[in-house]
Image (cartoon, rainbow, N blue to C red):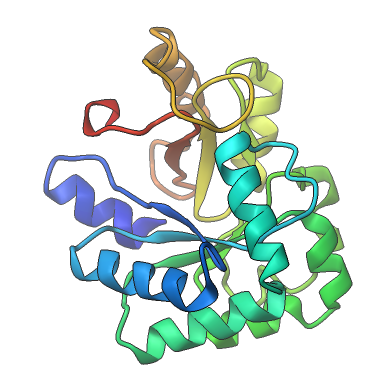
Length: 221
């Protein structure tokens, strides 16, 4: 998203958007965690809503998701948490992170309610751009809606995602599921270079790239 990316660029560094699973270890503690991290000056947040079958996630997030489900966290809980965080004065961009099924179950007002809660967008790892119409109102409510690219993505696929994504492109830095890695692949810079080649240099359709999956230490920035 431009707001956090431009700040990071002006300081000549990568933007940092940590992921926090709502409801782990408890709902109150996870909200407090976001509030405290925000005070440290991070650039934004991925606010996770649990799902029973998080296919893109490794054992750490799977465990956190299971605990959060047992604690009763839902999409509505996520919206309420974002409202509370805004009321606490958290000003950084916040993107709800959820798989598709809970969003469809929520209903057609999801995008409107997400915007009214104070969120900046949605990250949905199992929603490809070809099926984006399943979630109505995202564009009308000016919500960021990134789509995912993997190291195995072809140039054709990169072009499709670059055209469809709003706010930024979610660059999956490694193949496989989420989780800490000892290092990131050496070909990552070439991969990101291929993506940048599909971004309009004039800025009319500028897409920021946020790399995720496997980064767990400052040196990965």
